[in-house]
Length: 131
Image 1 (cartoon, rainbow, N blue to C red):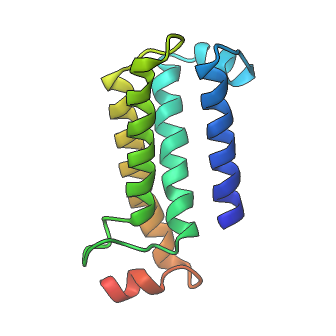
Image 2: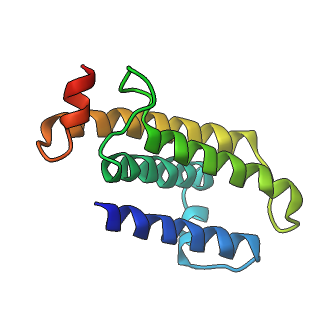
Image 3: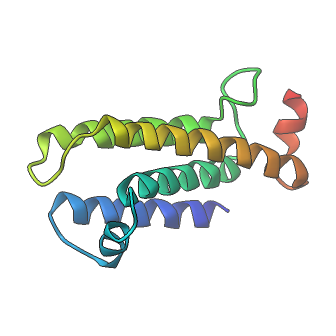
């Protein structure tokens, strides 16, 4: 699972690099063909990254509540920093709607990952201890 999470991070970083340098690719063309494609992309990419990171970190959490997953908080921090960095990049545009899509995706996929983690004997030890 760590390898898959690492590959997802590389994929997102490559998309961010292309967007920051004004390059185009098939994923950007695909999102333009979908209504609210940019927001759907933010929702799915960062939500998926949060879910994979939670599994990769075996559901480490920062408090007694299992809802505050370390992986999700890490992805939230990175996505927030990335969005605010767009203020300083001429080829990008900062958007609170993108931040909201990131947050909603991370929140929903965290809940999904917690439910999937509870049924996976390989990953659920921390979830069972915190319940």
